[in-house]
Amino acid sequence: MALSTTSSTEKAGAIVVEVSAVKAENIMQRRLTDIRFSFRLKHSFNHAGSPKRHPDGPKSLIGPRLVRAGRQAIMTVGLVICMTNDSYIGGFMIITASTAVAVFGQLLVRQYVENHKLKECHDVSGQFLAVIGTMYAVLLGLIVVDAMSKFQDATRTVEQEANSLADIFLLSERMPPQHRDRIQNFCIQYANQVVDEEWKTMDEGKVYLPARRTAIGLMKAAMDYEPVKESEKAVYPIMVQEVCQLWDNRRARTNMATNGMPWIEWVVLIVGGVITLVFTYFFYVESITLQVMMTAMVTVIIGLNLFLVLLFGYPFSGDLIVKPEAFKLDQLIFEDKISMRSTGHFADQ
View 1 (cartoon, rainbow, N blue to C red):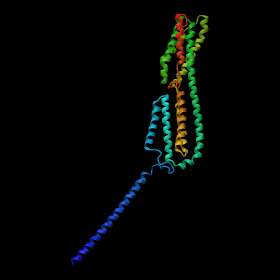
View 2 (cartoon, rainbow, N blue to C red):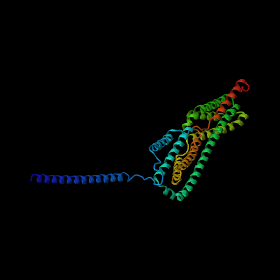
View 3 (cartoon, rainbow, N blue to C red):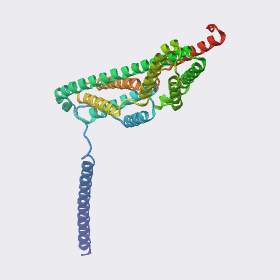
View 4 (cartoon, helix red, strand yellow):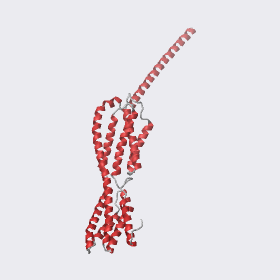
């Protein structure tokens, strides 16, 4: 009797253990299912708003290092444009950084846009690029030619101003010593101020006021003179004409120094260049290396032309400037003439 009671008790315990194990297994499966579902839900939320890479292209064109390099290039372009002058080093830095940004944009498009979509828009984007590229090329070419013409005009204006100053100095030799010395002193002072001081201030887009006051004094000295002799009467109208030409050329030179390229031209040139460059992204080349090289070359060509506008559009600032060599020649003429007068013969060369 005791044995039967014991066996029934053991069977009941075994049944309880088996039921508990089944329940525990069911609970574990339900928890595992919940964990899988929550993981899938979390994964779908994390990737719902992120751009998809194209399935038929490279899995990763842009790594973390390239992303950091692209950000650094963008910051470099902004910093250089804000801080640099129109110098050769600054232009090299701007073109290099702009090329890096353009290449980064090309890689960005190739990574997140499917290749078949790029192939589909070849015909349309090619026609648009032909129109936009032609318009931008014509506009950029005209502005480059205009900037180069402005540089040549500045060179010619400086030479004419220096020639007028030398003519005034030489024509004053026909006047009485008192008036002659007064006019020639103004000429010497003006040439020294232009060469030593005003050329530096024009590099900053400013006008050297003492030189302007000296020019006013020169005009007043020439106008105050009343010719008496016939030889003086013959020379005086020519001198007045040269003084007027000196003033006209001076105004033209200072206007060129203080007024550079209009800002709206720069806006149009930069925006047009960016749009033209972005249109090159909407093409597909099997070799990403070749497409990056072509994008870089287009960027360099546009950057070089814009740099030409920057150099020639500001003829008195930067590394490429109109130099005061004509006024330095005037200084030599003045020294030789004064030396001839004091010694009675030509100065030794």
